[in-house]
Length: 276
Ligand code: 8IG
Image (spheres, protein in one colour):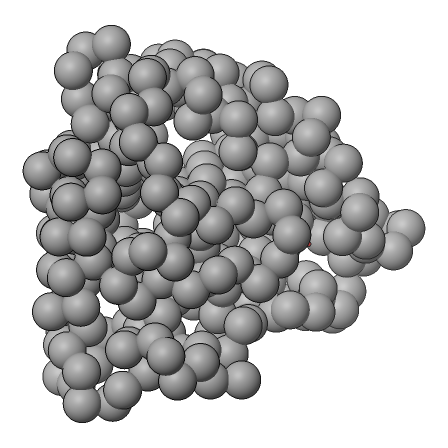
């Protein structure tokens, strides 16, 4: 599984030095020295980049230290630098590495650490996910209020004790709700994947306080907090979780729900970014 050409896989390497190298690559390739905001686009959120502002540079992720090609078709392997109408620089990460790819958590959080090294103080994390909460419908965006990390892993190495109270910024959630007062919120449970949950696992997630199930974001949010960033998280509910919906889950269904919701949630996200 391991890609020996990725320097993050060398156990003697320093992931923060490699993030600084990656940020230098981004500055050189985009011509933008510092970014203010970073945005990771998950399934269904891809169109948002076009609405945020003027794309001043698009670079293949493979040109940037430590980034690897995405495992899935439909996940775009590029980085974009966008200039908003208010003059802010947004780094759009269309190249998330998922934990289930098996490259280890350093590779999963490298984009977040790189974003921090470019100067970004705000990290906006988006994903497609399964919904547990009664009344939610596929195609609905929700705010992430907190998470439960069920991967059994962490991006933190050694005795690095980091406070996660208010991990998903109350200030930024309030800001998002001023733009769309109908936004509900929920606790995101990150499962390892890549298989979807069993109905029993979804009942467990619900019992322990979860309302969203997914395969990303929690590990990234921890790394973003370690880097001192303010975090905003959005899930697009593309399907109700296994056992909540009675029909089997399919990747195709998830992509379809994302495609249908894309214009609406992209406009919402662009408005939120405009207010950050
Ligand atoms: I899209 O139902 C999407 N991603 N774990 N469960 C998990 N991840 C998901 C799901 C889901 N839907």
